[in-house]
Image (tube, rainbow over the protein chains, first blue to last red):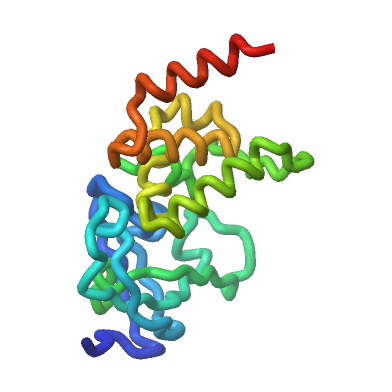
Length: 94
Length: 99
């Protein structure tokens, strides 16, 4: 399975609000960031959490967000960056 | 809506309590039992996290780190048929009665 995204690609986190064992925190949902690097493919924790096989493997990415894009009224440097690991099925091209 | 564990950025959530304490014996035991259940293939880390996230929100907030681990391990042991809730309650009652 080929990775859908490359480093530098702009991505938007899907604003899905659903139940389950979700590894994507609420505060990045709907936000736009940039792929920093691919981290490989791993069993899907959303399936493993309910006794599933976790297959097929899901690509995981280190995604960079500007802090000012995440928090209203962010008072720090505009260059402040947050890195977070997000699975491919939570990302759309931006 | 976000689960009780998904706190980042929540209005009024406050800062993180970073106070530490010496690890107690029961916490070592809780860790060991949980890891052994993984090694034996009885549960996975993801199931354990899911079980913690399924705790009643008020209970989740009132429990400490390893108290959540124990609560989640209990949920999974019952779910997988290793122990029954009655067996666990009976043993707890015995332990509470012993001096």
